Length: 138
Image (cartoon, rainbow, N blue to C red; front, side, top):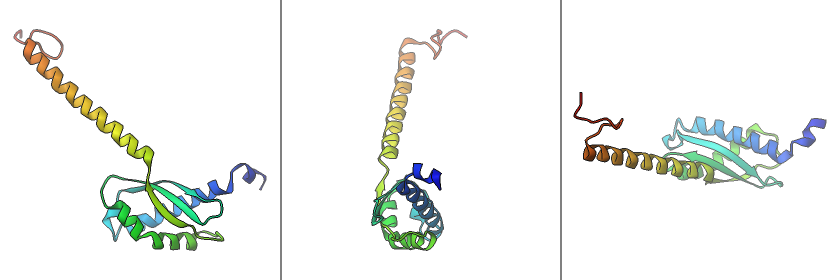
């Protein structure tokens, strides 16, 4: 019991709630394909356990509506599988770190494609291949 004091209760609750929601979403995805590629990335539960923000990542549209539609079922799973005094009311938010990562990835991909196009155009104009050698020489 002494080790528990170093790991705050809300952090333990967040972890358990995240696991329960992830398992419940996996089961719900059988019925609702909008939940197939949803990943729960984190949970922030209020200290009084009244509310919990669930952060998620999803690559397709409709995940936010599906999560809200299944909210009561997810809360029921939390109540059934945990021994909490209260079951927090869930709210869902796209994980801002994941969204930022996808934006950076898209920017890098666009820059890479632009660079590839620019390099190919330069080689066509100068008559050289990608190594800078004369393209007419065999």
